[in-house]
Image (tube, rainbow, N blue to C red; front, top):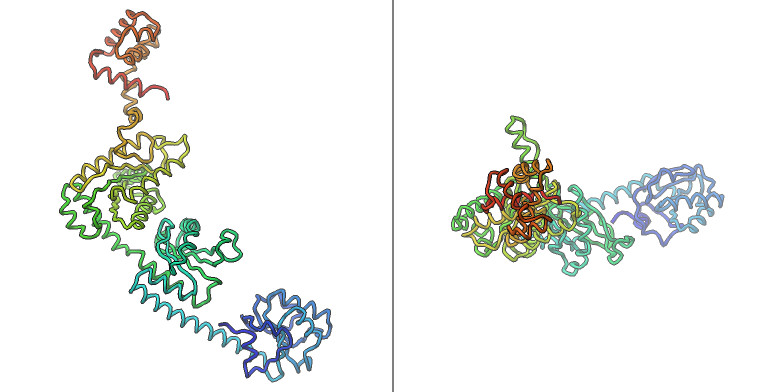
Length: 554
């Protein structure tokens, strides 16, 4: 505890006497300060014991003393010490009355007690309090370390809650509660998910204080809660919440900082270990795609639980921005220039998908295989599991949030594109990968965020023709017919469209055009002459129909 006025009054060597404010002696004293200024308030910070001899004060003037004491009380001065036997033989009654009226503690300092002795006593008490706090902090650090080694993060949270006389909670990358101590704090911790998500939007390390009796955002939770991001990367991988009834003291602050360091060590793998894990993931995936599931199981061991034995889904994802960065890097490398920074910004769309999938898998206790593949991301997840569901839900949310006029086909640089395979097993992993790639291609062509392979055949094939090469082919095929029509010698393009739409039925097509069937027959012969191809060939009819659809106005 820091020194208080009461501890100074009970200090046997100081011989201080209380003249006013007897009921407020438990006020902490931040420092002892000597000032003979008529108005020392501009130089005070609050919490000081002000020592005076009234050298420049008319201490017997009631009005002057009322103004003087009122200013001190308003500035948060802890108390006033008046030295007797210097300028006044006793504490003036005007000063005593003013102190009692304002409720400001007033201490009488005897002539034989120098102000320096009081300052030393305050300084020694503050130093002793700080030493106790540091010692308690080191003891807390040892206890937290012991519990972490013995029981993991859950043990650390329990020890931390005991150290701060409150509660503690650990959140994952998505803001979901992973563990709490004590258990009853789970509901309180869950209320802070939105605050944790906002904290993650700030560069690490980051912290914030929420709740508290005066907080309007969380009136249902009177706890003062400190939130701290955990991790060494730009975007935090998790967060720690510490709830207490009041602000943390020095010893408690040491305990919290120790917990942050220990949790960071337990939740962050080292760079070399992380890279080694990625290499194993990539090797296992390559073996599966090469049709060697037994070798893949041997290499994986118990890393992925039963993932390689149960039906799984293959997910392939990419973002146009990542694809364009990779293309730019390849172009600059080919030109002999330094490759641009593609640095794997953890805030990109693929990084967000990784967090969603891994967090969902961790909460459900599922194994998941995540492999960056150039500008793409490949994920192997249990069929019907939480990771696949979270991926689809994440994609649906992105698509719902996208403006109706915007589509991937329109070139949105920041959008995510995802393809999901049908359920498969390890022996058919290569086929599942091709299915996911096909679904990804269809999603890109249709302007969708996510397409599952089961839905590839759903809908129209026409959106798949939204390609510059297809449009160029269509324009080339129809150009001669359009040039003919431009001379006013017949409407061949419209005639071809009507004839094909009526499946070659002359009377129905002629009726649609409002011409005689012989006129239509003549026009179709002209089409064959101009194109140099027979309309009896089904390939020709197919190409003409697709060309007409590909060049039709939207």
